[in-house]
Length: 257
Image (cartoon, rainbow, N blue to C red; front, side):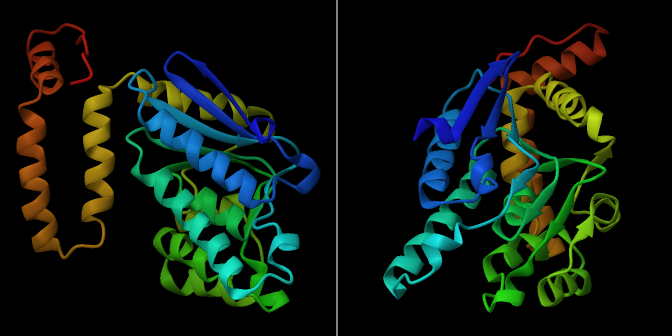
């Protein structure tokens, strides 16, 4: 089971690698459960400041393992999609930013996983698709992430046609944060993670949680909530250290609190 997920940590950045290239990194129940648990463990580790989510082989993830979906009764189907939901929520609920490093195709729940991550660094040959409609299984749960990453009409176009979009098009639409040459994607994702890891982990954790909390609020409610969040952020030790360091022209020393 552990071989499905590989992890390594360097300079406060943990790289998680989906390691099932023979299944095109299909999100089997076993893989999803393991990835959810690894992410949850990392979320409790204050020494880790950022996460890179990568994959072995030419496909980032082909989505759900359809061999598990085929023939399953309603109860089993619900277990599969509930587990997927738990995984996606864990990605966004851990305090560390998660950067998807996408090389090749990310399709269906694989596209959902990439879109759920806080940032996406994609190689130029990468592409994203939600082709479930072509096999009679509309990508409704991937649509949750896709609809929050893309404009409504473009999200519906992906979901209704199943047509893939290129990394460059995904960048234009806002689903991807960075597109680089395929040969540079590992370095680019690592550099981005390292830059994030230099900031106060306590401040980043506050910011990530607050961002997702306010994103679907009205403007009035969002400002009300975020003014309280910034006030609470301003009194933590790292914020006061950072402000003092800026005013006295020195480098801050973060304590993670």
